[in-house]
Length: 204
Image (cartoon, rainbow, N blue to C red; front, side, top):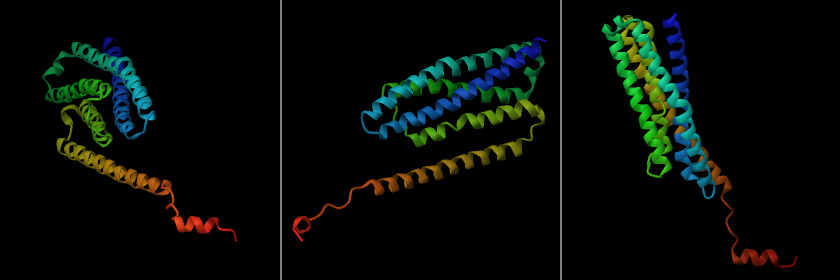
């Protein structure tokens, strides 16, 4: 029964952890793009995003990470023989990369709070896709284990990365077009010349 309890809370931890990482990356995007706003909106938005990031990281994302790791260790104590399997070694390498990503998010959060992060919203959009790729690799390894078709998986992950990059680039172009259109529609009409103004004021 211990194995099932450990596995249940391990899965719960994974869901909480990744939910936090996905949302945290999105908050970084909004935080960076808040610099494009005029005052006082810029200061208000950055202050609000800073609070949201801190609470999300400390109260949801990090506890989810801790539960995931602790329950994973407990699972290994119930079946230590899997430590000899190559698939687990690869999976643990991806988990290590995810842990590095997690703590790097904490560093970015502190840099944003002190205005020392020069990343753009576009860069954070790419950054925010890293957990998706890691999650895909980890889940596939956990399900297929040594039977995972590496060639198909590698090409599938590569295709996913290409699709993500293309989508982000297309979205960036769309946002640029929409912004240019909005600016053109909001631009004031050409001021009238002195002669036109004088003519308009003459009595008919």
